[in-house]
Image (cartoon, rainbow, N blue to C red; front, side):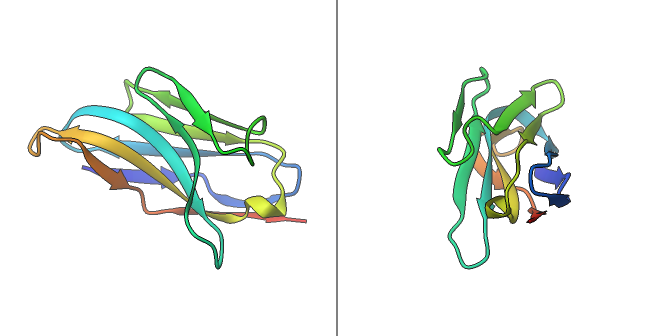
Length: 120
C-alpha cells in the first residue's frame, strides 16, 4: 500500500492550487484521509481531514480558503487551496488510515510530500 501525492508547485499570493493523493495497492478499505504540512523550521501540522463518510475538519488557519474532498471509488483525496498566502508555503503530506488486504488492520500511511511555494 502506498500514497502518491501530486500537484504542488509555485504560485503567486492570492492564487490557487489543487493537490491530489491517490492510495494504491492491496487495499480493503480506506478510512480517514487528510493533509498535513510542514513549513521550514516548524512542526508538521494538520491542515484538513475527511472521513470515509465525508465529514471534514480544518485547521483554523485554512478555514474558508481550503477545501478537502475525496473520491472513494479512486481512493483519492484532494485539497483545493484558494487565496494562498506566503504563510501557506510548506511541504504538504497526505495521510490515510488504510486497512490492507494482507495486513488486515488499520494502519496510517504517508505520502512522499509535495512542495507548495507561495510567492509574495
